[in-house]
Image (cartoon, rainbow, N blue to C red):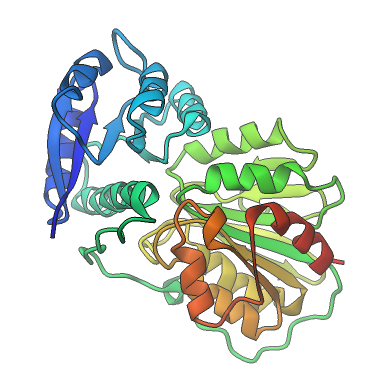
Length: 356
C-alpha cells in the first residue's frame, strides 16, 4: 500500500521532530519533508509533492495564514493546522479553517505515555482524514490502524435499558461532525431563527479551540453559541459546543435539559465523542430528540444514532455530495439509524420541521 506523504512546517525543531516520529510510526504515513518556515516550504514544494501539509500558524518570515492562501491558490494540497492552545493561536486556527484548512490539531508536547499515545492516534487520523478529503472521489482513504483500543460509549454510560422517560414535549437537537464540520456547522447554524430548539454539538476539535470556534459562530448567527460548561441548561435559542478533550452528555432533570461535561477515555478514537452525546440523547430525550450527523471520517456517532433511531428520535444524515468526507454519515446509514439523508443546505429546514 502506498503511504500518505506528509510535509511538516514548523519553526520549532522539537515540534518538527515530534510530529515526524508520531507520523512515521504509522505504516500508512511517511514524512516526506520538513521545513522551518513557509519560505523554505515553498522552495521544497518546487521539487517535492506531499499529499498533506501539516503547518503551524505563527512562524517567522511568513505567517501560516499567508502560507495557506498560497497553497490554496496554487497546489490545493490539503493543509492541517498544527497550532498552540494560546488564545491568539486558537483564533488564527479558526481563521485558517475559513481559508481552506481541512483540520486542526494541537501541538504535541512531551508528557505522559498516555498523552503521547493519544496524540499519535489523533494526529495520524487527522492526516488520513485530510487525505481522504482531497482524494475521496479517486481512492478510498488509507485504513486506520488500531493502535489503541477503540472504546464505545459504554465507558461513559451503560447501554440504554428500558427505563421510563419523564414525559415532556420540549424538543432538543444533537449534532455530530468531524472533518469539514466547522464550515458545515456554520452554514447550518447561520440560517436558524432565534427561537430554534436548544442544540448540543460535538465537533471533533482539540482542547481550547472549541471556545474560539464558538465565539466565531456566535458573531455570525441569530442563535446564541457558546462552549458548553458543566450543568449548562439546553434552552431555545442556545447552541452549546462540546469543549475539546471532554465528553459532553445530554441529561434531564424533570423537564429541564442540561449538559454534563466530564473527562473520560477516547471513545471511537475521540474525546469528545459523538456516540457519547447521541447515546445520552437516546436515553434522556428519546422521541423528543432530533439527531444530525454531518461530514467526517470514521464511524463515531453511527451506533449512537442507531440508538436514537430505536428510541423514536428523528435522525438526519448529510448526503455524500455535500460532505467533505462521507464517513460518519455513511456508517450511520449502513447501520439503519437514519430516517432521512439530505444535502447540507436542506438540513436546517428539516430540523425545524421535525422539532415542531
